[in-house]
Image (cartoon, rainbow over all chains, first blue to last red; front, side, top):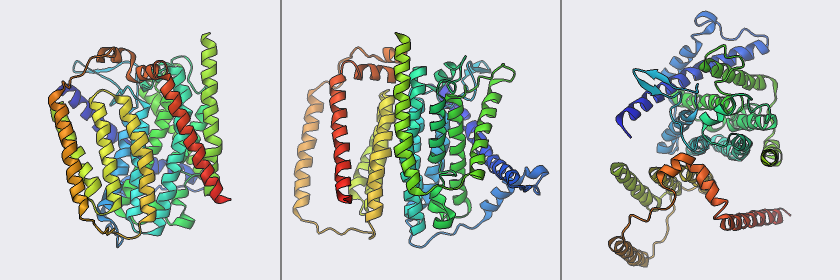
Length: 333
Length: 168
């Protein structure tokens, strides 16, 4: 562990965090614009050209708002919960290789296109998101409000349930690539993207990923009509913005992992564009799917949601895992 | 490395005391979560990355979430006041001293460096931590793994049976 590694990692982490925060800001604008078009409205278009400065205006507004706090809250946990959520959301991105397969050489140093090329790879994502559940749960519990508590219970139960399907739907990829390391997984897709042989797993992953990030049509934790705003009902100002930030960054991360694991990461069909651009295009397309689903599907009922998770997605991803194993072993014989 | 270990050891002690000392159950449970996270980082210092992930996913992420759920749902009052039997401290003192004595005896009598096995850091780096662990688990330790999985299956079936009987 020498100094160079530490400095380079810190710089890369800072770049990734800045990128994710900008991505979050423009994701909100992207979502509002696309949704508006789907509903025959112009969407935000007053602040700056095409409304491009809208996220900045929203950020400033939230920053200068006073933060109202509920009576009878658990002060320490109430403050810690939004920080925990954002921290977990930002930390998950560390394993994602934005481009590759080689290095960029800056001032004679070979620098990889990732913050961390961990041996455990994708398991890091699952470990950190399981800590993120505490952020949401503690937010709901510490607010001392029944809407918050119910929202938090729903949310964390949903996240824990769908994490199983999410993890198992990725196992076929590990079988084909023979590694947890995301760089190895992308390199294995040099010729064929894994989405072609593993289309069912990709669909399972996307459904579970949308549920995992608590987005429509699985946004039960924030069902406005029954729970006000779910676990962050009692949060306002910048602290509310932190939860918002965590949710959008989680969407970006789920899309990035889908890109890396199923859609060939930095590989493009004809090699026309450099790697990072292919990565970005694929992530934006998947984020568009998120917005599309939100604009077109009604919210599910909670018991149906749990049944979908445990009785459909989980067995299907187990089946997919076994089928892939059988095919791979049969092909080796 | 030594500095990192010292910080971690201090963290583990503080959170372990937190598990017992706090008067509010949710803080006890959260201290235990913090303690498990520290343990996971200890695994990481020992180059056991897979154990790091498994420790967090299974214990901090799944088991303790259920604890926190139960505490949050069943704990309307802020403080639990237990009538404290005076003998409790005496028992604690006796077992504490005996346990500390055992550890001291071990530390002074044994060479704690251990014996190097076939899986040196070089071998692990060549094949990958997860790959080696998987290969060993499913070849040399196949029987224990299978027996444990049957045990867990029995527990799961039992839980489903109990839950179903209650509904009927």
